[in-house]
Image (cartoon, rainbow, N blue to C red; front, side):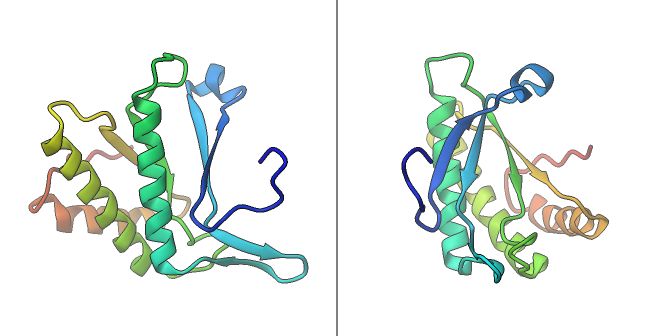
Length: 153
């Protein structure tokens, strides 16, 4: 954050990936301000609309990095957590559906707009079996309506 003490909701700050570059070929880490915290009160997620805006900001920043001339930072893929569903304690179903829709629309729009999209892959980072099942269900619902390629790992 440099000399900043706070960041605005939805802001995205890019940092180096440190050792993850060598161990996992991570090009950069994008930190999105999606929760607010206060000593003694814990964390609370920002509003749903601001989470969607944060998702758009992350996608825009990832696209910007994908066009970087520096090979060490350029990447066409992005790993996204389910914003607000961890420490933010939001309902995974409602938020994940909105985040997924935003990402699908973004990827579809840019794949039509550009001959070759700069960002081609978004991977979701999930930690529970329920979140995995939710992602699968939402992907299957959208597979027939959009430019999705569903793969599991």
